[in-house]
Image (tube, rainbow, N blue to C red):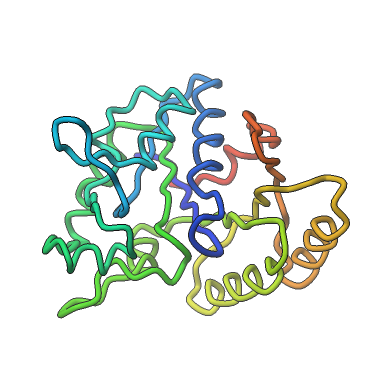
Length: 228
Protein backbone atom coordinates (compact mmCIF):
# COMPACT_ATOMS: atom_id res chain seq x y z
CA UNK A 1 0.00 0.00 0.00
CA UNK A 2 1.09 3.54 -0.74
CA UNK A 3 2.04 6.35 1.58
CA UNK A 4 -0.04 9.43 0.83
CA UNK A 5 -0.19 13.21 1.22
CA UNK A 6 -3.10 15.51 0.33
CA UNK A 7 -2.30 18.98 -1.04
CA UNK A 8 -4.96 21.57 -0.26
CA UNK A 9 -4.89 25.34 -0.58
CA UNK A 10 -6.28 28.52 0.86
CA UNK A 11 -8.25 29.03 -2.36
CA UNK A 12 -8.15 28.54 -6.10
CA UNK A 13 -5.30 29.75 -8.34
CA UNK A 14 -2.77 30.03 -5.53
CA UNK A 15 -0.37 27.48 -7.01
CA UNK A 16 -1.33 24.04 -5.68
CA UNK A 17 -0.65 22.41 -9.03
CA UNK A 18 2.70 24.15 -9.45
CA UNK A 19 3.86 23.13 -5.97
CA UNK A 20 2.52 19.61 -6.47
CA UNK A 21 4.55 19.36 -9.66
CA UNK A 22 7.71 20.34 -7.77
CA UNK A 23 6.92 17.77 -5.09
CA UNK A 24 6.51 14.96 -7.63
CA UNK A 25 9.68 16.13 -9.40
CA UNK A 26 11.55 15.59 -6.14
CA UNK A 27 10.24 12.03 -5.89
CA UNK A 28 11.19 11.35 -9.51
CA UNK A 29 14.72 12.65 -8.94
CA UNK A 30 15.07 10.26 -6.01
CA UNK A 31 13.85 7.39 -8.20
CA UNK A 32 10.75 6.73 -6.12
CA UNK A 33 7.66 4.96 -7.45
CA UNK A 34 5.32 7.94 -7.10
CA UNK A 35 1.92 8.92 -8.51
CA UNK A 36 -0.44 11.89 -8.73
CA UNK A 37 -4.20 11.89 -8.14
CA UNK A 38 -6.98 14.47 -8.25
CA UNK A 39 -10.60 13.47 -7.73
CA UNK A 40 -12.17 16.12 -9.96
CA UNK A 41 -10.76 18.71 -12.33
CA UNK A 42 -12.78 21.43 -14.06
CA UNK A 43 -11.97 24.10 -16.63
CA UNK A 44 -10.15 21.73 -18.98
CA UNK A 45 -9.68 22.07 -22.75
CA UNK A 46 -10.04 19.58 -25.60
CA UNK A 47 -7.29 18.32 -27.87
CA UNK A 48 -7.54 18.31 -31.66
CA UNK A 49 -9.49 15.05 -31.49
CA UNK A 50 -12.07 16.50 -29.12
CA UNK A 51 -10.84 14.65 -26.04
CA UNK A 52 -10.78 16.48 -22.71
CA UNK A 53 -7.24 16.82 -21.33
CA UNK A 54 -6.83 17.00 -17.52
CA UNK A 55 -4.63 20.07 -17.62
CA UNK A 56 -3.46 20.08 -13.98
CA UNK A 57 -2.45 16.43 -14.28
CA UNK A 58 -0.73 17.12 -17.60
CA UNK A 59 1.23 20.00 -16.04
CA UNK A 60 2.32 17.86 -13.08
CA UNK A 61 3.36 15.00 -15.34
CA UNK A 62 5.30 17.39 -17.60
CA UNK A 63 7.20 19.22 -14.85
CA UNK A 64 7.90 16.10 -12.77
CA UNK A 65 8.50 13.59 -15.58
CA UNK A 66 6.81 10.82 -13.61
CA UNK A 67 6.02 7.71 -15.68
CA UNK A 68 2.41 7.38 -14.50
CA UNK A 69 -0.08 7.38 -17.41
CA UNK A 70 -2.23 10.51 -17.66
CA UNK A 71 -5.47 8.53 -17.72
CA UNK A 72 -4.81 7.23 -14.18
CA UNK A 73 -4.57 10.67 -12.64
CA UNK A 74 -8.11 12.04 -12.52
CA UNK A 75 -11.41 10.12 -12.68
CA UNK A 76 -13.67 13.15 -13.22
CA UNK A 77 -12.69 15.70 -15.87
CA UNK A 78 -14.96 18.64 -16.67
CA UNK A 79 -14.76 21.29 -19.37
CA UNK A 80 -16.75 24.05 -17.67
CA UNK A 81 -14.51 26.45 -15.73
CA UNK A 82 -16.44 26.50 -12.45
CA UNK A 83 -16.34 24.53 -9.20
CA UNK A 84 -16.45 20.76 -9.85
CA UNK A 85 -19.89 20.38 -8.25
CA UNK A 86 -21.39 22.94 -10.66
CA UNK A 87 -19.46 21.68 -13.69
CA UNK A 88 -20.75 18.18 -12.91
CA UNK A 89 -24.32 19.50 -12.76
CA UNK A 90 -23.97 21.41 -16.04
CA UNK A 91 -22.34 18.47 -17.82
CA UNK A 92 -24.61 15.86 -16.22
CA UNK A 93 -21.73 13.78 -14.91
CA UNK A 94 -22.05 13.72 -11.11
CA UNK A 95 -19.13 12.53 -9.02
CA UNK A 96 -19.50 9.31 -7.05
CA UNK A 97 -17.22 9.04 -4.02
CA UNK A 98 -17.12 5.25 -4.29
CA UNK A 99 -15.65 5.51 -7.78
CA UNK A 100 -13.08 8.10 -6.68
CA UNK A 101 -12.00 5.80 -3.85
CA UNK A 102 -11.94 2.75 -6.11
CA UNK A 103 -9.57 4.48 -8.55
CA UNK A 104 -7.41 5.76 -5.71
CA UNK A 105 -7.19 2.31 -4.11
CA UNK A 106 -6.10 0.86 -7.43
CA UNK A 107 -3.20 3.34 -7.54
CA UNK A 108 -2.36 2.57 -3.92
CA UNK A 109 -1.66 -1.03 -4.96
CA UNK A 110 0.70 0.07 -7.75
CA UNK A 111 2.68 2.99 -6.30
CA UNK A 112 4.69 3.58 -3.14
CA UNK A 113 3.78 7.26 -2.80
CA UNK A 114 0.70 9.17 -3.94
CA UNK A 115 0.38 12.95 -3.90
CA UNK A 116 -3.29 13.93 -3.98
CA UNK A 117 -4.25 17.43 -5.09
CA UNK A 118 -7.49 19.02 -3.98
CA UNK A 119 -9.81 21.20 -6.04
CA UNK A 120 -9.89 24.85 -4.94
CA UNK A 121 -9.80 25.33 -1.18
CA UNK A 122 -10.55 22.87 1.59
CA UNK A 123 -14.30 23.64 1.61
CA UNK A 124 -14.73 22.98 -2.14
CA UNK A 125 -17.83 20.85 -2.82
CA UNK A 126 -17.38 17.98 -5.25
CA UNK A 127 -21.10 17.30 -5.51
CA UNK A 128 -24.10 19.21 -4.21
CA UNK A 129 -27.44 17.81 -5.34
CA UNK A 130 -29.31 14.81 -3.95
CA UNK A 131 -25.89 13.79 -2.61
CA UNK A 132 -23.56 16.14 -0.75
CA UNK A 133 -19.88 15.27 -1.26
CA UNK A 134 -17.03 17.55 -0.20
CA UNK A 135 -13.25 17.30 -0.38
CA UNK A 136 -13.31 16.60 3.33
CA UNK A 137 -15.27 13.39 2.70
CA UNK A 138 -12.54 12.12 0.40
CA UNK A 139 -9.79 13.13 2.82
CA UNK A 140 -11.47 11.43 5.78
CA UNK A 141 -12.34 8.29 3.83
CA UNK A 142 -8.62 7.51 3.53
CA UNK A 143 -7.25 9.45 6.55
CA UNK A 144 -4.92 11.63 4.51
CA UNK A 145 -2.36 13.95 6.06
CA UNK A 146 -2.64 17.42 4.52
CA UNK A 147 -0.23 20.09 3.39
CA UNK A 148 -1.54 23.63 2.82
CA UNK A 149 -0.33 25.75 -0.10
CA UNK A 150 -0.85 29.51 0.26
CA UNK A 151 0.13 32.66 -1.59
CA UNK A 152 2.78 34.57 0.36
CA UNK A 153 1.19 37.95 -0.32
CA UNK A 154 -1.52 40.23 1.01
CA UNK A 155 -4.45 38.50 2.70
CA UNK A 156 -2.70 35.24 3.42
CA UNK A 157 -2.84 35.58 7.22
CA UNK A 158 -6.62 35.59 7.15
CA UNK A 159 -6.91 32.79 4.59
CA UNK A 160 -4.37 30.53 6.30
CA UNK A 161 -5.86 31.02 9.75
CA UNK A 162 -9.40 30.34 8.49
CA UNK A 163 -8.23 27.27 6.56
CA UNK A 164 -6.30 25.78 9.49
CA UNK A 165 -9.09 26.47 11.96
CA UNK A 166 -11.64 24.80 9.69
CA UNK A 167 -9.39 21.78 9.27
CA UNK A 168 -8.74 21.51 12.99
CA UNK A 169 -12.46 21.77 13.74
CA UNK A 170 -13.08 18.84 11.39
CA UNK A 171 -10.13 16.82 12.71
CA UNK A 172 -8.14 16.91 9.47
CA UNK A 173 -4.41 16.44 10.20
CA UNK A 174 -2.18 19.28 9.00
CA UNK A 175 1.51 18.61 8.32
CA UNK A 176 2.55 22.16 7.49
CA UNK A 177 2.34 25.05 5.02
CA UNK A 178 4.15 25.95 1.80
CA UNK A 179 4.29 29.59 0.70
CA UNK A 180 4.05 30.22 -3.05
CA UNK A 181 5.07 33.39 -4.95
CA UNK A 182 7.41 34.17 -2.07
CA UNK A 183 9.82 37.10 -2.34
CA UNK A 184 12.67 36.76 0.19
CA UNK A 185 13.32 40.52 0.36
CA UNK A 186 9.65 41.42 0.77
CA UNK A 187 8.97 42.69 4.31
CA UNK A 188 5.27 41.78 4.14
CA UNK A 189 5.95 38.24 2.92
CA UNK A 190 8.36 37.63 5.80
CA UNK A 191 5.95 39.13 8.31
CA UNK A 192 3.15 36.96 6.89
CA UNK A 193 5.33 33.90 7.39
CA UNK A 194 6.11 34.84 10.98
CA UNK A 195 2.50 35.62 11.88
CA UNK A 196 1.04 32.56 10.17
CA UNK A 197 3.37 30.30 12.11
CA UNK A 198 2.76 32.18 15.37
CA UNK A 199 -1.03 32.16 15.10
CA UNK A 200 -1.63 28.68 13.66
CA UNK A 201 1.30 26.86 15.33
CA UNK A 202 1.96 25.30 11.93
CA UNK A 203 5.41 25.37 10.34
CA UNK A 204 6.02 26.94 6.92
CA UNK A 205 8.08 24.08 5.52
CA UNK A 206 9.21 25.72 2.29
CA UNK A 207 8.91 28.94 0.32
CA UNK A 208 8.53 28.75 -3.47
CA UNK A 209 9.52 31.74 -5.56
CA UNK A 210 7.91 32.46 -8.91
CA UNK A 211 9.69 30.41 -11.56
CA UNK A 212 11.42 28.02 -9.14
CA UNK A 213 12.23 24.66 -10.70
CA UNK A 214 13.06 22.96 -7.40
CA UNK A 215 11.31 22.67 -4.05
CA UNK A 216 13.60 23.98 -1.32
CA UNK A 217 12.86 21.17 1.12
CA UNK A 218 15.18 18.23 1.88
CA UNK A 219 13.74 15.03 0.45
CA UNK A 220 13.96 13.26 3.81
CA UNK A 221 11.66 15.89 5.34
CA UNK A 222 9.28 15.78 2.39
CA UNK A 223 9.10 11.99 2.44
CA UNK A 224 8.35 12.01 6.17
CA UNK A 225 5.11 13.91 5.52
CA UNK A 226 3.62 10.90 3.75
CA UNK A 227 1.67 8.31 5.70
CA UNK A 228 0.05 4.99 4.85
